[in-house]
Image (cartoon, rainbow, N blue to C red; front, top):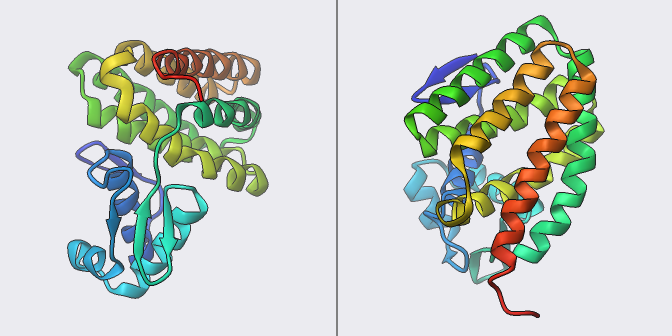
Length: 227
């Protein structure tokens, strides 16, 4: 694993499509491409300095994950954020992430356990330094590592559909409703439990994290008018 300004990369080689996806996903999650924006494939290709074919493939993946909609002959629409839909998403995340945390604690390789410890340490640094972007990138790295360490391709595919939507929702609302220090500690506790090969502790840590995320999400829903 390499570290570059807080970004953890778990694949030794990245294709142009990977690069396009990772860059676009972060632009969307951090709201630099905002909900409701309509952009063209050509403009994105120019912005990323990556050819249109990799960008198109990246956009197809982002569309499957619900972050964009591809509008034929019109462009690419960045999807809106719906707090009530986020609560439904959390129902799925809770069950899948508990499974992945418990299984990862049993199946993770030695190298993966080292990476979990590194992420836990990074989360604690992000807490001490109030490093918001560092936290976001570490959260993404932890999500991907948990999915990989479980060594269950079906659960990995399923949970992957929730990651970007969840991180974007957090980024939109965390300044008003989140406790970054608590969130960083809960993530670090989960990473430590998986590293320690403690499946039940990992499952409990996962539940505590999702409990917090659900509470955070409900605080945003409470201030919205009923549908």
